[in-house]
Image (cartoon, rainbow, N blue to C red):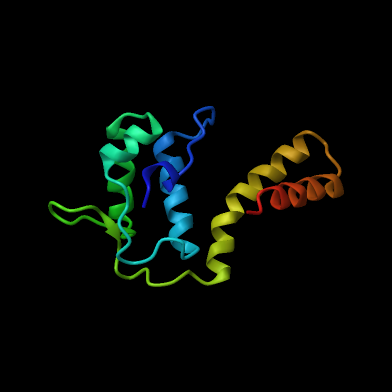
Length: 131
């Protein structure tokens, strides 16, 4: 997999880069975009592609390995762990989306936006993101 297209990092985000990386890999595995045995970019490749310190990538990879999502192979690229053969059920994927939607809902309430307007904005953003 190409390091340039593996993840997208938002350097302006308040969320640390290593957390952004963890969440994106977690979601891609849950959706079945990354499956058991798929190789992931090396620490060096990804750090260079994202212009971040290699220790940031190494920290994220180590945490993903501790979660059982990635497997380290001595002298070879890391891969998605064997137990992730297919996408998780929709109910589990929805639970991964819930925190982001809760945060968006809180921001909408703080801005005192009408519910219909916030929902329409979400629908518009979803449609913009379609390939």
